[in-house]
Image (tube, one colour):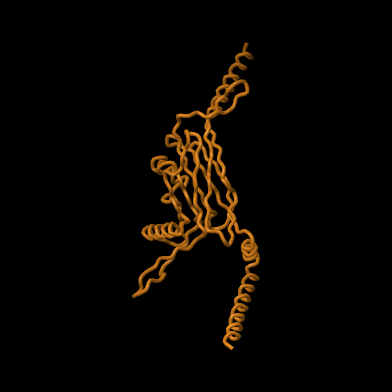
Length: 266
């Protein structure tokens, strides 16, 4: 009798856990391309990020996942490049001209950062949770290597983000992700021609009622292609030889230009 009760108890626990797992949300995401190749003719591109939201429940004897409608979800998509140190300079007017007078080094910042959402960020998550995800330009964590006062941090941070937005390397779009029937979603992100090469990450966050439910991360590779790739690889793997060759090519181009000029004038 004791053994029967034990089996019944374990069976109830298994059944409850099955229902809990089966009813939990699932999210499947993918990219239109996981590789962006940059050539001499590259003028920018677009990336499609799409996916589906499911809430699995058992069906039939075998059981399979189906989608439940009527639930309000929010999606936040963040695309960012690898981090590295960057220098931001501040211009000041000296007499009739403007010149760089001061600078700060930003530690481990993204060379590219883009975010798009279903609604305004402050309607999706609290400020604390947005800061934790670094979801939004205002939520980006920016540290300075040099000693900097709070007023200087604010000024340099604002100037850095303003410059990156002007270069189309930083941008934030709210309310641009569409969710079809509460299940399928898609987002389109733009990449400018001056986007940095390297490894990127694409994070898709699923939110409901102010709570983060799931996060999916996909890799994205941005690299040179063709002759540009060979030159880029050679320059980074053999910088001294690349420098010498660049000088020789410049000298040869100067000599050739002078030689042709003398021939044409004579």
